[in-house]
Amino acid sequence: MLTTRKKAIAIKNTQIHAKDTGSPEVQVSLLSKKIQELTDHLKVHKKDNHSRRGLIQMVANRRTHLKYLQTSNKKRYDAVVKKLGLK
Image (tube, helix red, strand yellow):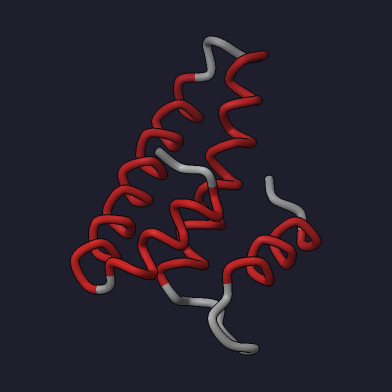
């Protein structure tokens, strides 16, 4: 689970303007944090298939957001990928 503090930091690092909470950049950032935490959880609990299914859904959702961002605005896509260390 992402704590409120971790979530606020992730939003603050990628938001476009002061009240931005729903842009693709912010959503990709939050999904990346959740994916990282779930990955760490699954390293300990190898047989937790319900969480593994959720992880796969989150990865697919993040991929969808990145694909949208790549087709709509290449500069913003490159900035997010570089900032989050993806690919």
